[in-house]
Length: 440
Image 1 (cartoon, one colour):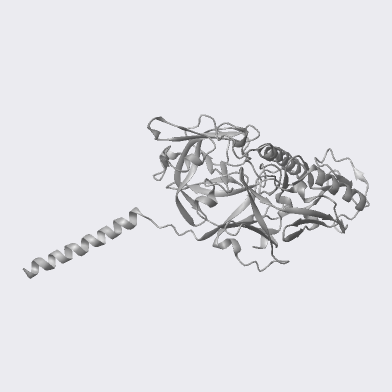
Image 2 (cartoon, rainbow, N blue to C red):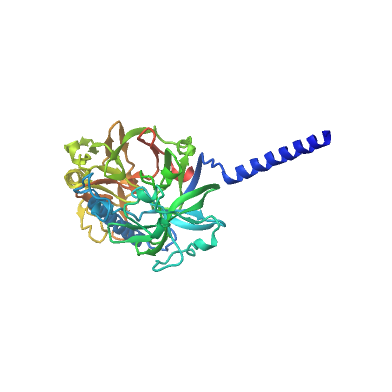
């Protein structure tokens, strides 16, 4: 009798241990408190000359600016979700991160994009795929790949989707303002980000993908919607620090707890300004109040840069636009101020691709240019010379890397270089800290 009870107790303990193990195996706990990834410039491995790099950068920026303007002009918060101009997202960009997808994992280069939300990569079988630098992801070779049904919450977050018979698959079409697109199935996978694994991340497995995403396999959306990487991983903070664009050094990006990592090499104080929300887009808006050139604060009303009640206008900060654009009224004031203060002859800038260039002085590196300061709500972004003037060596020009736009203003990545830019989505604020980014 005693022996029977002992055996029963051993049996029960064994069962409880097995159940605990099974339960743990079925419900893995993700502990993604934070991680770091290194970014490469999209043209860093292209073996382009400096003038070719410059022209490619300007070409991408112009296209992206026009896409932003198209998306934000004449918008209504009550616009239809299917097939309208409000479904056009921005796409493309300047920096690439390596992400690993699947089990076993395969590494792919993906463009980071604060101007869109969907994470996607090209997938086999390809109906149409653009050339990419790595093999195309094969979902049938991954044990963790799953197609998401049409009933999935994130399926309904897509701007356009179609349901297959019995709702077993959520088919998406994600279009961009220049006519490029990706079409495929919304799916879930295990993503490896640095040394961290994230399970059941929703992403687009694209079988039909147009050109326009050079040097990558797809995009990682970092916008505000539920589809973006930061939203899915429930991070409330992320940051990046773009190294000088004429260097091949990598630029660090931080997520979660590491976003506010102490910057021992900071060359100035941290400043913060509110992040504004637009009810018709997931871009990151700032309150730009004014601009100073040299010692003169320009006579430009803050309404020129303000976000309008219908969702149009405003000033955004963007990872994927290389140069900055100011709404035309503001830009004309900036242009006139530099022409009057530079004391250099204005040169023909058509070959360089910029709007305003000067004949370069004999000692460019030591030549003192007028200051340029963005006045945001609660913060002043005082740019170093290299963040707004570029020496175009081939034509010996000194060119302003800020241009005019219609309907929207954009703070580009060149103006952000060597600042740690921290997006705090919990406190709705943006912090910038001057620092040597390649030292982080």
